[in-house]
Length: 538
Image 1 (cartoon, helix red, strand yellow):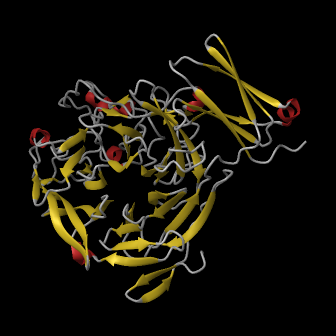
Image 2 (cartoon, rainbow, N blue to C red):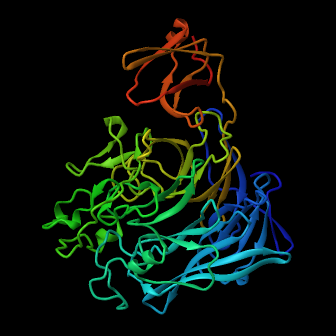
Image 3 (cartoon, rainbow, N blue to C red):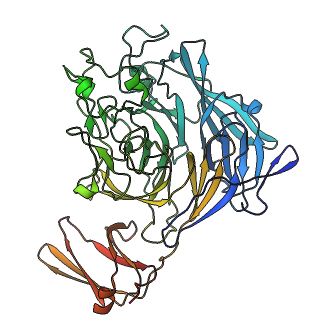
């Protein structure tokens, strides 16, 4: 427990007790407890106010708190009755400090309304108004992901809102009778919406063609991008949880007008139910512990609609972490990077969320400008069966070392675990070199992960580069430490880790480490080496 951690609630100072045991074994990174969230409702979203750098979080009961990221103290800033949003599952803050709350409510027993409320800061608090309401759309018996994630575009002109799917994998979900028989997704589901921040009293139609014609459709084919974040270069990313089948979870580079494959593609794999003669009894990817399998929703489905002509696949993860997959051929769980292949993107059922970036580029080179994401689901680190991610601890914080192709066509990432031991982590924000992580449900933990800045823990080293044909030889000398990281850059701003080398006593005696790289891409490449840790014992 952090001394002095408390929450201010109706004039009372209430002490907060930390829970869980978050830890890191990465040199240069530290973990600090900031106590817990308020023991009422469920803390679900956290955002930084760009006007003054303050941190707000909203609970599922609608109350909004300001969090002091240094002490953990919390002050209720907005009560649920002030804005009237039922089930606020999304929050964003614009460049002028305007708060956007995204939520939903049931309509009778068969339908859902999506809601967007706008709170403009004033002299005596926020002035709230209804920005947009969706038309009623059909509730399904099991898989209603609803309106949730939201983000304001960098120019402040639009709010992007994720509206998740109403199916697990595109199966028929026509329960409750509101939607026509044989219905799967509706116009308003499995999409990201684009709403002008100037809107007032807008009605969003439950029709894909109308949404497109009105400019309200940003992207489609997304099962449930539960968090959205901009990278320092302005590219938008989203993390998505796939269905109850053992296919990968996704990290997507989100671009307007793209279709991201759902329900025909999950990860970079085809949904088998779309093909004639599909036999679920022969499908080694079906997990018997999950709802869609228990309910018998994987079936031979002759009326499954045809796929779009063009679909965009997720970002490929090159490992070393969060890249386990079940092989459809033999049903065995394997490690993609151990096999020298990539995965699109994460181990099944991790439920990635809490995406953030080093937008200020203040971190040391091995992290500078990079992304970080949480995983919500508890894993099965020693088992390949049961629910949850297999052979994967999960409930962790990943470093996402993203590299964009030289032609700008896409990204790959290297995912590395840098902190573990969270309990249902739900969201994060980044302030300078600190990531604030908030756990979900009742009185759960708030944690501060502090990362190294500047040039990092680098010893006195020299880097010599020579080139022979298509290969470059890089020689590092005058170093002292336990681990060497070789980083590559096209522009001297964004650095991508290409090699991580454990330094041995023999290397120390030789006085050099030599790496040969094949240079296939056009243009100049720059390399940097950083060394950290204590040198190996003689």
